[in-house]
Amino acid sequence: MENTDDLKNFSNLAKNLQILETLPIVKQNTSFSQKLADLKEKLENKTFQLVVLGQYKRGKTSIINALLGEELLPVAIVPLTSIITILEYGETEKIIVKFFDGKNKEIKRSELSCYITELENPKNKKGIESVKISFCSNFLAKGVQIIDTPGIGSVYRHNTDIACEFVPRADAGLFIVTADPPIGEAELEFLNKIQAYLAKIIFVQNKIDQISEKERIESLDFTKKIISKEVKRQDLQFFSISAKLALEGKNDHDRQKIVQSNIENLEIDLATLIAEKKDEILATSIQGKLNNLLGEILLQLALQESTLQMSENELKEKTDRFMKETERIEKEKEDAYFVLQGQAERLANEILLEDIEIFKTQKLTELETKYNRFFQENSRLNNQDLVQEFNMFLEKEIKEIFSAWQKMEEQKIQSSLRSLTNRFTEQTNTFIRQVIDLSANIFNLELKELVAESPLVKEIEFKFSFDEYEIDIDVFTPIVSHLPKFISRHLFYPKFKEDVSREFDKHCGRARYDFHQRILKSITQYQEKLYGTLEETIIGIKAVLNKSLRDKEQKKVDGEKYKEEIFKQRKMISEIKTYI
Ligand SMILES: Nc1nc2c(ncn2[C@@H]2O[C@H](COP(=O)(O)OP(=O)(O)OP(=O)(O)O)[C@@H](O)[C@H]2O)c(=O)[nH]1
Ligand SMILES: [Mg+2]
Image (tube, rainbow, N blue to C red; front, side):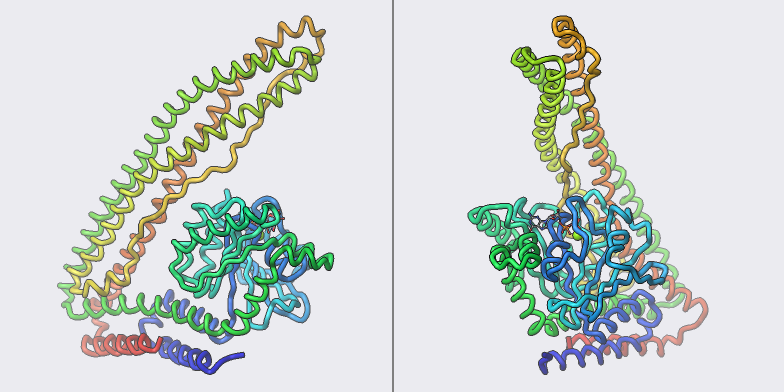
C-alpha cells in the first residue's frame, strides 16, 4: 500500500529528474545522462531491489531457495554463483539470459547452472550480463526483485568485482554471514565499501544448524558487536537462521524443522518491510543516488564557470600549469609506486626467505624425530601397511606443520604489509589533496566545493588472507614393499628419511612461492584501487579544461550567455537539493 508521503516523494523525485534531464551539462556528458536514465527507470518502474550479499559459500543462494521454498538456484560446496541473478514475480516460470552484446535467450531451469555458475561458465566466458527469473512465489511481491550475487573474497576475484559493481544500483541488502566462522576481515572490508549505497541493510547469520544454541548466541553477539562498530545506523537488524533446515522443512512439510530453522522471523520481517517500508526505502535510496549525482554535476559546473571568466590565453596558461603540475604529481606517484613495489618485493624475498630457512631447519629436525618414533612404533606392520601408514603419517604431519606456520607467517606479513601500505595511503591522499589545492588555486574555486565532492581515499584496511594450504604427498615407490620384511626394512629406513626430507623441502618451496605471489598480487591490486581514485579526480578536471579550451579556440562561446546558462543550472540544482 502506498502512503501519501511516499507518493509525494516519488512525484517530487520524478519532477526533479525531469528538470535535471534538460540541463545542458547532463545532455553533454554521457556518464551523467546514463546515471540519470538509470534513476528514472528505477523510479518509473518502482522496482525495489533487495540484493543478497556476502562472502562466498555463506549460503546466499541457499537462503533465496529457502525463502522461495524450492531448490530453484544451484548451490554448492565450492564458490559457485558467478552471475547477477534477478528474481521477480511472474505467474509462470520464465528464465531469460541477458548477454553483454544485447541479445537475450530464454532457457529452461535445468540449464541454469550452465549460465550462472563458475563451474560451467568460468570467468563468465559466455559474456552474460545478468539472468532474470520470473517465478511464482508468495515471497516475491510485485515490484520487488531479489538479487543473488556472486560471493566476494574467493579465489575468483572477478566474482567480487561483479558483486561490488551491482550494489550501487540496489536499494536494500541482505548481508549474509555464518555463525561459524563468524564475520571476518574480508567481509567487514566489503561491508564498509558498500554500506553507503544501500538505504537499508539486514544482517543474517546462516548455518546455525552446525552449532549449539550457546555457540549461536555467542557468535551472534560477536557479529552484532563488530557490525555495530562499522555500521553507524540506528535500525540494525540481525537474524540467525539455517537455510538448510528451512528448505528441508518446507520440502518435507516438517513443521518442527521449519521452526528450528528460525527462518520465519526473517520472513515476517521481510514481508513487513516490503509491505510497509518498500516505497520509503526506495525513495530514500533514489534520493541518495541523486544527491551523489548532483555533487558531481556541481563540481563540473563550478569548473566550467571559472574557466569562463578567463581569456583564452589565461585559460591556456592555467591549463598548461595544471597539466605540468599534475605531470609532476603523476611522476611522484609513479616513484611511490615503484618504491612500494620494491618494498613488497624485499619483504617477499628477504623476510620470507629468512623465515622459511629458519622454519625449515627447526621443523625438519622435529619431523625426523617424529618419524624415527613412527618407524619404531610401527615396525610390526607388514610392508604394505607400513608404507600406507607412513604416507598418512607424513601427510598429516606436513599439513599440521605448514598450517601452523602459515597462520603465524600470514599475521607477520600482514602487519608488515599494513605498515607499508598505511604510509602509501597517506601519500596518495596527499597527491589527491595536491590536485585539489592546485585546481582551487589555479581556477579560483571554492576549496570547500571541491573537497566536499572529492573522492579522498579513506584509510584502507589491508586484507591479506590465504586459503587452506593444499597438501599432496607424492612419496614412495612401493616396489620395495613387496620384498620380504627382513630385506626391505634396511632399504626402507633411508628411503623414508630421503622422502621426508624431499617432501618437506618441496613444500617449503611451494609455500614460499605461494606467499611471494600473493604478496605481490595483493600490493598491485591495492595500488590499482588507490590510483583509480587519483586518476578519476585528475581526469574529471582535465575533461572540463579541454572542453573549455576547445570552445574558446573555436570562439563557440558567447561568454555572457554561457555564464548565464551555468548560473541557471546551478540555481536549478540548488533548488533540487532543497527538495531532496
Ligand atoms: N549446514 C548448512 N549448510 C548450508 C546452509 N546454507 C547453505 N549451506 C551449504 O553451504 C554451501 C554453500 O551454499 P550456497 O548457497 O551455494 O552459498 P553461496 O553464498 O551462494 O555461495 P557462492 O555462490 O559461491 O557465493 C552449500 O554446500 C550449502 O549446502 C545451512 O544453513 N546449513
Ligand atoms: Mg551462490
